[in-house]
Length: 120
Length: 109
Image (cartoon, rainbow over all chains, first blue to last red; front, side, top):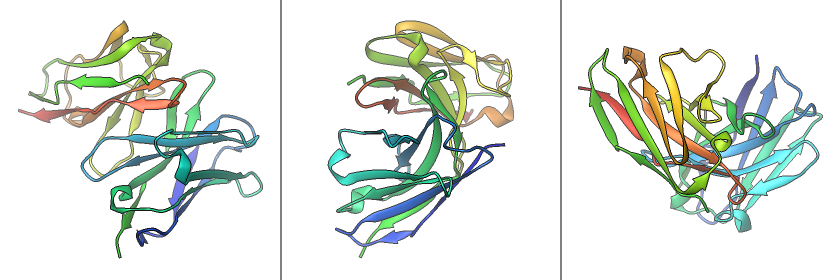
């Protein structure tokens, strides 16, 4: 059973960098697929942030591209998100997910999500 | 950029009734690239349908998807108590790679 678990600080100060990690179990991320980050502001809808392949290939949402870096560590079977220069509008639940890029073209396994609040 | 518009915003129905949710794309898309998710409060979204009409693993057959071009639908044949939730459609494209609709809340009448 594939499981994903997000971790990282729940509170980040404005203008600082948000950093989250997604640990994957039950599947080796080196095997394939893309691995992505999605966020959901409180009471609002879903926004895709970006995705990464074990080869290091990345795709980012153009609206966030200038502030986002996604990296992968196959030795630890995890991938990470950094979002710089955060503001209150970046307050959201951040989810990581497995992206079925080559067949289902959707996100089939998700982490439970972690709330990140941007506040001084 | 493909924009997905879901309607209605809220659907008030009773258990046992049929629910039909709409997802309209701003331009024609391949049905292969259209998915649906269910999200309950405090939980992550769950993949229901991919390729517009294929059920994901473990999804009951009361859920069905249809559509082509710009108009897609998710139908829940007979609502069970656990089906009351928010539903999102999603397109897999080029830039951005994934986009979501604004969601439809199915609430108990």
